[in-house]
Length: 152
Image (cartoon, rainbow, N blue to C red; front, side, top):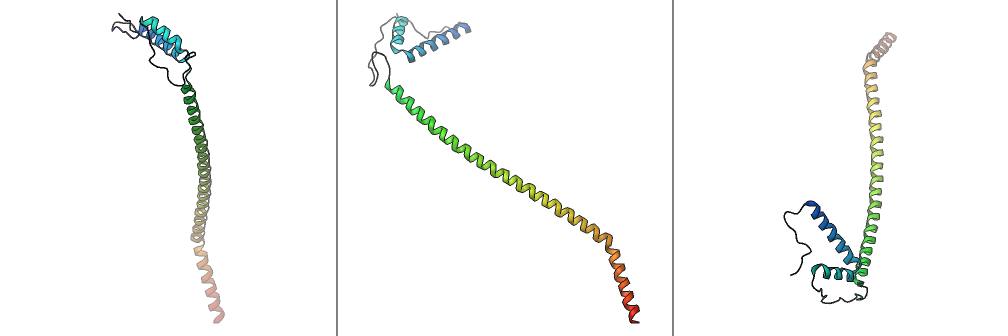
């Protein structure tokens, strides 16, 4: 009869589940670091001989080191480098956009200040015209009276 690594009874306590998870993590870590030790431990745990059907190309049977892992690591490093390059370009573009937005903000402030100056100037002009309108009419009437008296 064989033993199962993942046998689980529905009545198990959460502590037992956590223990199983920790044991499973240890087994997986052992496989990643030392394949032969993992296979030996699996054989002892299950109780039947474990036969590896074939050793893939690039796997050193003595150490269990797989050259594909190195190849995947190289591909991962290349992808990370490309990602870093793209991120650096995006940061540069973002800085450019932010600097342009700062320029737009400065232009908006200048435009707003100009609008206030023009508005206040128009208000002063309107108040001056309204206040001095009677003076202009009285000066005009006085000039008319002076012209008429000098003619007559």
